[in-house]
Image 1 (tube, helix red, strand yellow):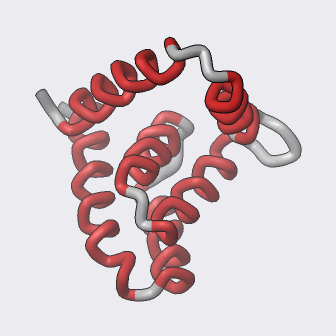
Image 2 (spheres, rainbow, N blue to C red; image 1 turned 90 degrees about the vertical axis):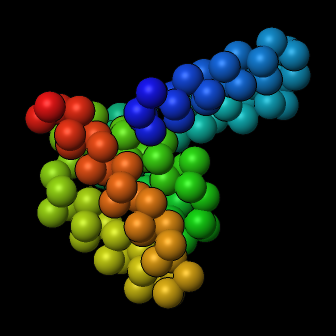
Length: 116
């Protein structure tokens, strides 16, 4: 199983368990998150790049993978994603570098699945 499948399978499984508990606050937060990234005054591609940068600065590897995949699916290019990485490093500092390494590894896997 590759990194993308492993991440998505685990995410799906755990989200199903979480949402099955029928907690109103958790369900509303999940819905708010979904709606925040919907097309609006900003397009989805831009919102996902913002989510990626924020996730890198906050150093959330799961969030980074999620937004990298969404960026990839929205048509963000490698050059664009590396500009997002550079802004994230300027804002977050050198502590972002380990997350950058894992992000590049995940991005390469996304590219390889398309090209392979």
